[in-house]
Image (cartoon, rainbow, N blue to C red; front, side, top):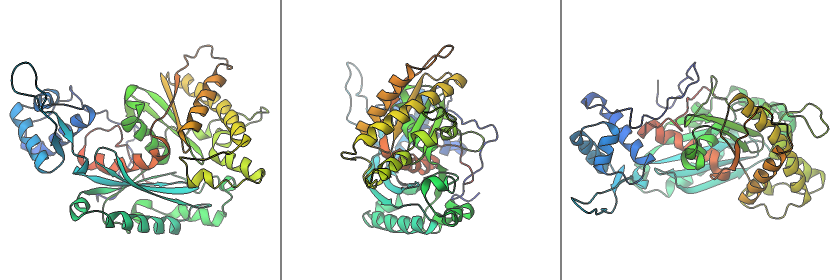
Length: 414
């Protein structure tokens, strides 16, 4: 299969768990690439490992581990930290991933905006570009990617350009759905039905392209770069234009049979009057947009600057109350199926809004009948608005350099 194409989803939907201390390495030359990935993954997950620690945790001989580490240093993927002196023996030298060892780009295609980030090997976003629109069209996205990539690559040195691992895309798998809620012409949105995003964007850039569902990508970013590493299992809700989510089991993202596990937006929750409704129609940001429009307030600030909304007014209070009430019901339903210890909530809004939403959810949960359900902790995410693009940018890095499957989701055909 060509490098730029997405493999099909595993029929079981299972995502392999990271091969840690008990996974072991292998000393055969024919699997050196596996061992290199294993060592890079160990260093990424655990800061401050020495060569001896790496050999012990990987199951490789000290000599084999030393040879591989030296090669990874020469390739610029690993770097040495300052020696740590103990009471006896030689000082221990901690190893770390070199931030400049590799780079990737992550593209989030949303229903109101597109983001593109340039990310380094340790997950730091070097630069970001944002494009807002009333609704996305294939040509709008192509032009945005072309312009943004050209401007970012122009800032790179020749050495940096040679270290680009690829471009990951995070997008709703059925971007043409919910046309009425978006206020977009049906014929324009139907254009997405026949688009192969991997192939389409692959014609614009000169490096491999990867694809993942946007909410699943955000979930993976929280797992790897946020507080998700603190929990073995958790449900994840991301509130964007339309609300979505993800599922983490045994410290790995579970993408499901079609890659759409955690499609919480379709959950029935009912509206305030008790009429049938889905979570997507109660807790999405397009609902807040409609509230603002109804009161003659320009909602563009929601998408133009997700990190700072300014003073929106009472419409925000009303939306938070409505979203929290519906999310409390959805969380109760999710936890009646899988006994999650934690639910993490994040979204495309400023941190103060996220914290208010989480606090309101906690209050709303106390008013529900919880008999027979062990309620999880409801915690705020820490990656924030950029989670979808960051999760997308992780795909090329993990595909090329690492073994951890926490963010190397089972990819599916768009």
